[in-house]
Amino acid sequence: MQQVPVSLWTLVAGIVVTAISIWIGQNHTLMPVQASLQAPLVDGFFNVMFTIAIALFLVVEGTIVLFLIQFRRRPGDDTDGVRVEGNVPLEVFWTAIPTVIVLLLGIYSVDVFNRMGGFEPAGHPHSAAHVAHMPGTALAATLSDTSQATVAPTIAPTIGIGASPQTLNKPADLVVDVKGIQYAWIFNYPDSGITSGELHIPVGADVQLNLSAQDVIHSFWVPNFRLKQDALPGIPTELRFVATKPGTYPVVCAELCGGYHGSMRTQVIVHTPEEYDSWRTENQIAQQQNLNQVVAINPAHLSTSEFLAPHTHDMGISAATLESVVMSH
Image 1 (cartoon, one colour):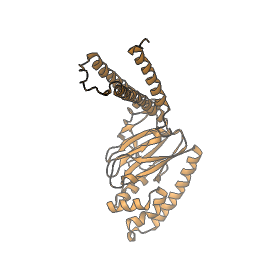
Image 2: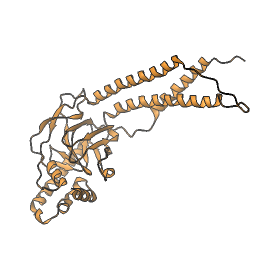
Image 3: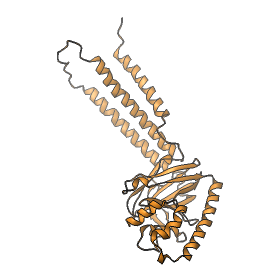
Image 4: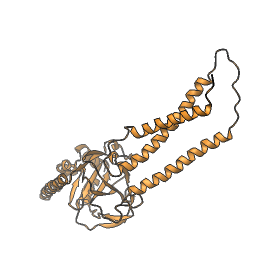
């Protein structure tokens, strides 16, 4: 019986490994549902890397298993193994191939970063309303910061994900100021004066988030959008994106920011345009009523937590979070 050449076995193995890697790399369910215009770009890059990783895993682990079987010690064989010297062509091959892969992935990642807007967050309007009316409490200062919507915006250089090549030099449809504090996210809408503990946006709108931090570094991460950006004290950062699917998606702080970091979660609610207009109208009316109630109260007789308690529900902040923030400051 004629023996099959090693080169033919290698070709067949290569075809099988390639087919399996491509199928798994394109049909896995590791990522959450895509909900932004940027998500397919990130997923495409991830799928390529995952495909390559699967191929490398099959080649390396398959070779190990093959060698375990082929070169296992037979019963009664106490001789030394065959002395193996270096193989220069093989060493060049397994050095050159990974080098080429890494270079190509680097070029691909830069292209994805550019198409997402990573090269264009240079300078955009940011709310300059940062005046505290209740000194001595960081949360109170933050609420005061985010409640001032009439102050003219300032132009500040930023880092992060800005305008894509398609939206370059075009203003965003919706601008939201986002402040991270220990341990909550505060969202202020300068165009309407709404302050919320949840992010509400219309589907299909070009949204710009101006990120900042009150105390320590936080990281604003929406897994379904495939977007993550640090919020830095004193340094403005930005996220600009387009949501493509209505729904409710988690917002997670991805930077260890203190003892209650794990509870620093909220959600982004993507509305239809009609639902968003209704939400904005309802909240403008509700917050105006709350403002009238606050003006009628004499805060001198109330503790900070008592003074802010009526407004925590509207902002989406739990009482426990409020109390922890007040005590920590």
